[in-house]
Length: 313
Image (cartoon, rainbow, N blue to C red):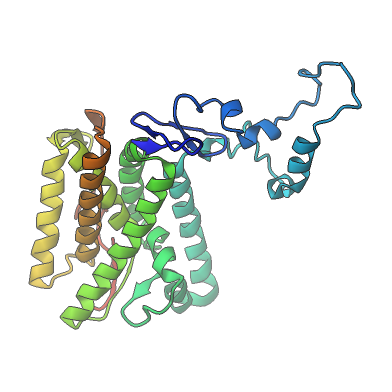
């Protein structure tokens, strides 16, 4: 259930406008009923919709909005028919795009300034938790030396993300992703400080597991095809992931550099938010879809290095 951006009505089956990105009820789902920005961006070079009544009459409001829009100055079509239309009202795929663009910038940073510049820009660490930008860049960054890290996280977000976004709305989904990612990162370095082990962390697994936690509460019997082969209920996958994380946190091991603390914190955030959604909005998720996981849990294998190295989640 989500709230309509126009009337504030709670809607169990909300509509996400792919043009402006808003969330609306059935009454306001049409572009003209919620004053969609796409109405002002329509390109009509041949005058198909020209009434011919009086060419001197112009929609001054629409013209002013078009001329004042910053997107009109970009060298790419940002309208509803352009290449960016697919990301309108679709935070899940926007997040995936940001992850892969960040991955590219990580390589640029490595080539320009080496590991030190890369760590200063993208990794949240026990040495420099005051680097505020890394609270957020570390969520979207992944190990630049192992492509499987970002691939496995992308798979989880690709399958789980749209389901959660559909039921909580795009804005709340974006907030869930960022907040759970930040808390997961701080959870990991907090555990490392408590254990007296310096470390740094990067990756989207904390946020991805938060998404999985929401679905686990909304529909614990949701069938997941692990590795696209083995059908198991999502509650079992969640329980197994939590058990693995608790075990390695308790033993002080990193299991190949995996940030199990971030995994556990992200999962707990998702379970808590899922319980809140279930009690206040009474929604359920679909019954089946496929998921490909990776070693060490849905977030894929951990990063290189031991207790003092960079952990990926």
